[in-house]
Amino acid sequence: MQKLLEAIKEAKESSITTQKGLDAATKSAYNAISGICAAIVKAENTPIKAKLDDESLKQLHDSHAQWLEQEEQKLADHNKQQETIWQKQSQRLTNIVKNNEGVWISTKLFYIVGSLFLLSIITIVLEIAFYVYFHWIL
Image (tube, rainbow, N blue to C red; front, side, top):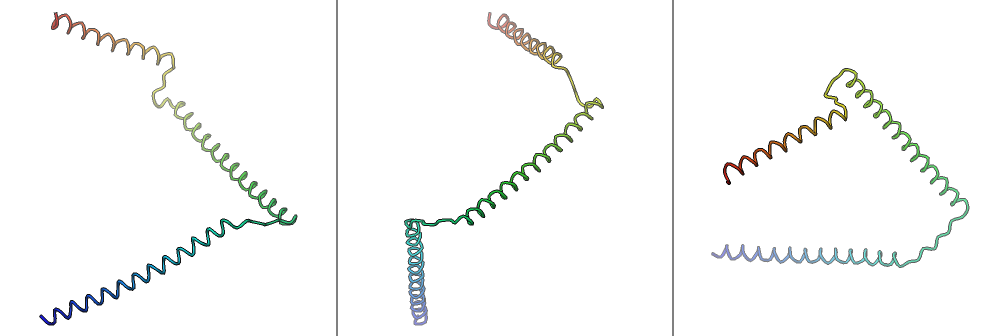
């Protein structure tokens, strides 16, 4: 029983030591974060007084012009790539049509067949409605 009480006492002391260490680490982290926040607030409130001389301004303008040229080149390359993709797709579609693959109907035929199909569906629905009405309701 005595050993159990000693073990509990040692565990309690170890727990207290660990808790003190965690408290110290928490305070240290809080101080660090507070310092960072204070530095950010100070930096936000500091006015910027920077002036560029003519040479720096020219270098900035030149680097911006180079960046624009690079972006224009990327856009031109992308357009060329898209054009080749469209040409391949067009050639593929031309080959499909040339070989009479797939189902190809004209617009006039589509509207004629579609209208007749829709009319036949409506007729069947009406026939069923009249049959139900005259045979089961009356």
